[in-house]
Image (tube, rainbow, N blue to C red; front, side, top):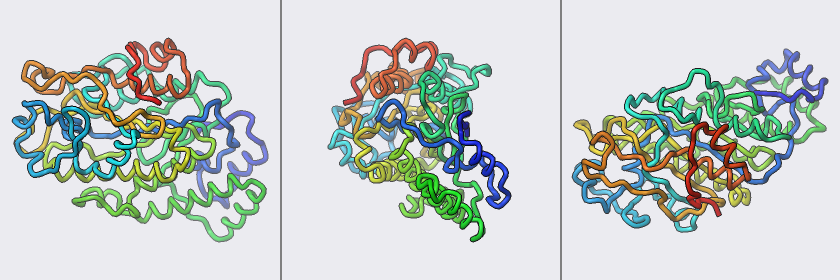
Length: 405
């Protein structure tokens, strides 16, 4: 967590020196030395990194393309058809999101990718996605993420303007601009005496008091969950017990306050085998996460854009283990009251052999970074040149796709 230099000295010394609290200040953004400060804009942006390469062809299915059924003889067998726009249908595990689609608060961009090609490494793909660079290889000299570079150019921000939430390192927010981090694995077990001490210290600061109490309660619940084992179970976990929902709920509560940007990840999208079961489970998680944001944000949802993106797509053809292998073009999911949904954006390249990238993958027809850039330009009025040169070096944003209201 970054702290502003003007933080109150007394509170900083207390938090850094108190052995009674028994927790690291760096792991507790809710007890930060920086007071909440309003950002210069009201819109919220949520970035969800889908780690493992989500199969966009299965999520938003091009059922109107004649080659699709031949490439996927078993993956869709017996599934209901949830029609979207034109040639596309939605994966049935995302059926809970159909009301958002009909309300114009859910949309997709198909055949998108970062500039990354050929090697199809999860690690490199995720590094490039979060760095936002314009080359198809990781750049060791780039130490910050594109969200952080965007924040670096905006005055008047505090560490609560942007939150990185969850267990995974969020490189998209790494960098010198102030931001807060919270991980549910943080140990926050306090004695009754320590809790009373905290209550006294923050008695005159209701924001800090409420946030610390909520964070300790949430962390205790998450610490009791067998998250890794639960991830291996078939079918979606109960919503009340799902760690991703609780992370989304915590993020939403910050976004209802001074926070304007939140970033977290959902893992488990690598579907080399048994894709039907695995993808249904993680899509159920994603749907529940988005609905949690919708519910917990309340009226703030109307000012919110959610972008869920992955490092690359998967092969057009299913493999011999009823899964798909690492590919290229994929899907970007967009949600929120600020989104102009009810539409599948992008230019469809087709799935004939000659239309595929290297005759195996969906051909990208747009840079996924351009959708993120146009979202930030529309929400925050950022200069297009700054977005193309600094936030996303080497990006040509192209024409405005019109994804915001």
